[in-house]
Length: 254
Image 1: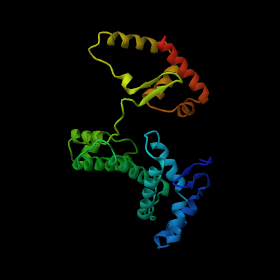
Image 2 (image 1 turned 90 degrees about the vertical axis):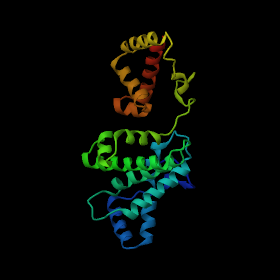
Image 3 (image 1 turned 90 degrees about the horizontal axis):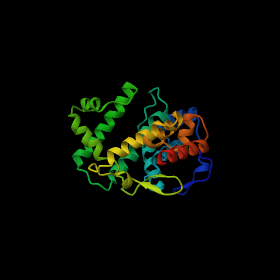
Image 4 (image 1 turned 30 degrees about the horizontal axis):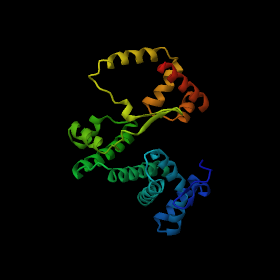
């Protein structure tokens, strides 16, 4: 995992150590006993965990060094707050803490200013969501989150929407090596007489695709997955996914 040399914050990630679960347990016990050397060793031994988490936030234009440093803060907090008496793997506890720290950083550095009260509601909603996910072992509904907080559902929706990263109209959404399609290209005039005809034509074109082609387009453009993720889910190579995707788009265009 991440064997290639990638330098983040001056750290050669290919040389980061990996601790076994037993080693983590022993180091955590020493940390709770006040051993600072064990704490440093535990931090260094989990930097790969931070690296794996920040991969989820790439493609946003954020500086990876900054995200890595913020992720390390989340790692340190998880080490300091971890309860060794609980029958929980450290990584299970640490990953949500690291993700939460990065999300807070991204929200606080959002280019759209949001009032503190709405931000506070959003933070509480995210915390309630994590609690309910642990409780139900599934994604909670907005109503369940609102009930947990004792707030109107509309307030929770508004708060969560307010912290979503804004997207530029010139954000590329697709490129097949030729013309790039931007968010702006997907905006249309609802009053355009051709709109409904175009929609009918598009639906007919998609209807003529094979089930595999429909599946690939759905995963790529509805769920936002990469070609590598699609290849893993469908069970074919990334090259085949690329070929089938291009073929399906060509069919739709023609």
